[in-house]
Length: 268
Image 1 (cartoon, rainbow, N blue to C red):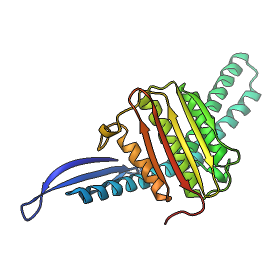
Image 2 (image 1 turned 120 degrees about the horizontal axis):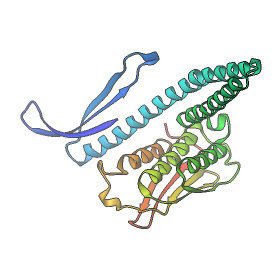
Image 3 (image 1 turned 180 degrees about the vertical axis):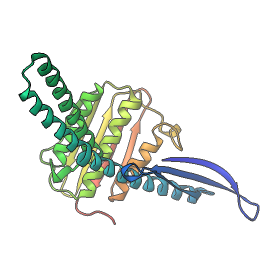
Image 4 (image 1 turned 30 degrees about the vertical axis):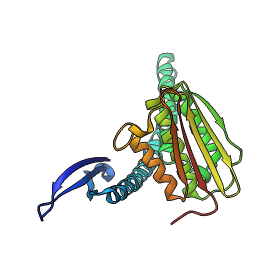
């Protein structure tokens, strides 16, 4: 999804500041996709603030919808096909007597198993089952530790086990905030380390993701600058479940993302 600012002329001859927004929505089963978008009048500070919220909310909705669809396709389609491939290779390996062919089939089976494992991980990251499968605490720990292995960033994970029962919307927001925060650490911070800390209280859960990287000046990272969209989306996710999120960063001293989400009720 992209947001582009522009100045346009109204029918009465006056000018207006607008944001043009569009995203490509892929089609099902190889069919042609569609472009979905809208134009928002942001003339004046109130309209601009509302437009930013609307843009962030719509971006979150589209992101989640696309992630869920692609995750389901990976899990129900490609993953099942790879399972069948593994079974066929294993069966063929048991029927072949020639050592050279056995060696080739064995290598192919190892590769197929590795690909299946990666596809399942991708499907999980795109559409995590959370409490329906592992539980929020195990899911977050699994993701954080896997992120460390993939990125080479040394991870520290501090969270209670179990976190306890939470509304599905809060679990999803919690997971995506951690995911986006760690993604920003990898893309922007240059930090060799990252820490994920969770605290569970009776009525809320607090999550904090921090790094020791280059940091940035918050005042200069708004309206399309680096970090801005990711921060907006994380704040919108927190707001959607009645929570709040703040970012603290100082050039040369790292960044901390902290969110507090209610677990007793979720705003409609």
